Image (tube, one colour):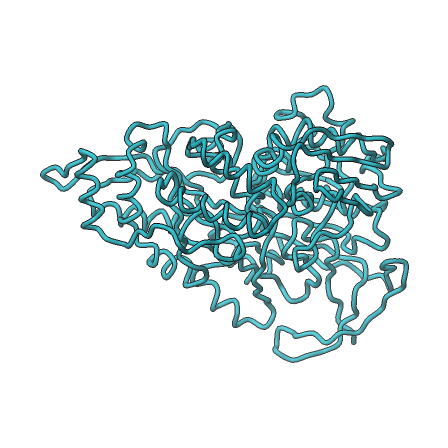
Length: 534
């Protein structure tokens, strides 16, 4: 499907003002001309994986959020510095003890079907959806949130049992999308028809989903933010990850959310394509490509087996050959980019095949006459195929044969997190700007649940549970830092997962597309297409 540009209207009201700007633009031939600045019209085509459904409260998967982040809103949204600014909530106050957050909702907001948005929708979204199904929000709030009050239709009050510092950082459309109570109440939320026929408050309305091919959204003419959105239509074209860079290069899509491997240098050299780093996005931020050991399987309960993997995998090779140096070798569960909470003072596992073999011997897994020790099922989404191939080759050198099971991303997530049908798995755990938003959910025992991107390893450690709880409930940043550093030291010792690389998030788009919110879930709220001036 080629990228489409529609006929342009002469001007656009943004924030109540009429805007008609002339901006310099780089053209495909490398020269410059003048383009008419932010105005309405046109269609942008986004490369996507098949979302399966459009309920962002059920999953933290980027495939669903890439689409749904433009249909729904959160109470807040983030600016480019990842600071919370108003969205469905126009203002808020926080009590001095950090236990009570009061939100005053934006006026004149309606759902796409015309029903007014109220505080009841917020309360329902948290109590019936997010605290049951959203792995990051559930893990962080379910044990510290006392209740949610709705004194009137325009006010929501969150009351906590203990001080809770990170709340504002977990209220955007990625971490806490607000869903319509009138569409979900009384249904089985996990299977509700509304999951595939979404009705939101966001900048775009759902029009069509052709499974395996595309999703179409159209402008919400009644959007509560004046003058927005600018685009007429957005088409999410379903393209396999391996083909997305080529689709961008050929002009059949206008944006891809992930760029890596040999495509980077080639696309950076094209004047009609912009390559940018982004600190966050629809799936979260500070992402770690992570091996998940299934601790329910007797073999992987053995610490020496898990440590053998840690020594047997050449993570620098993954960084160099798969990520082309874009990122860092991981040291533990908290990415170095979260500098205030990160600790480098943890146990290290150097790449050492001899040591890996010794640990497997100590676990009673001695090599046979052919050098083999054991076989294991290795499950992952197809987008991780190159990383998985490196891991497989590395571990074969120490006698471990990994049977590769590459699957569609939705099928892989179901098999790993819901069915627990794997020995070793590979996933990307993305986090928010605070470890409480993303890190916690993978390690606390209360999150050993059949929920995507939850505690997939089935790891349980009461001390870790207590430390995460304490870190979330103190307002003192130095004390939180100390607690998170203790957490990292314990987890790296026990290695319930193995952290491969922290990935840099590279995105690419055609230069005619402007003002993409690359760091946020609501990617397209302000996006517009350039129109050349004669």
